[in-house]
Length: 415
Image (cartoon, rainbow, N blue to C red; front, side, top):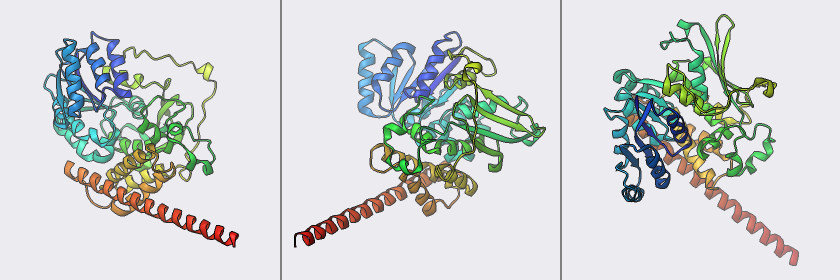
């Protein structure tokens, strides 16, 4: 019986994890669930799984959750705040931690689980992107096992030999190929990209995901972050990690060996497959996923990515090559840019423009500790806000000039 903490249980990965867990009550017991603000969803999950702890970020939401639990006679203890996340990630009674909090907000609790030597199921890619060296060091010192949940990295893990111990050359690996669907705008004319709406960017053709990761997929920043993540998970050089567009999302990634062999992991696009694989590893369990029908699919297509059309992928490679604080700066700038795009404050094409500007202004410096990561994140967010202020000021001046020109033109016409 594995005792689980699920960090970010109300998101798509958390919900899919609970779906797999429900299919195997003899193997898994939920000890703690956490959410940001979705008290009603967390209450429903507590009603089903009866965890010992439920953690929620905001006091008002915590009070609402505690009231709901009390009214229903559910004995789950409600905790609140960031410290509580670290507490439930490192509980002595917990064997396995699903790290599924999106963004930098999940960093401290993920590192806490690593330090505590947990079986760490890593869905929070930002932890490795921003603090790869720090997290991997914590895992080594704490004796944690990290199993990737991203479908691409989980596929690579499955395609590597069991003897892999952190040296690709030692097991004959030439390169890692991460597949990318190309997102919803793979065929959209470049001139139309600046007109993309948030709802259109979140309509992924193959996967059901949260809004932030859906936008990242549409810009291909998600794949760029995965390149950085792969560098740390598999101790790979940037030149050993390549991206290939595969619109069907059936081949989840591939590993090429020096003898010319290429081993791929295939399956229907359903996050329950990598979740079930990591939960039960090294065993295999039913994930509730439809089995793959290759005859029905008929053909699989691949093409090289267009980094001019999708500059975020290029920016991620550049940040990885630069190292130091650059990946953390990249991630923070992207989080700000996506948040502002989803709010309707900037255009889709301005996401990459903001990130590139922030990288050029504040990416230099070293990252040796968690404090260094958080300082780089804070500086990048401040820099991003400065870029947004400059952009808004320039836009305001442009509108004023247009209005003045229009007024002069009307006056000239009347005279």
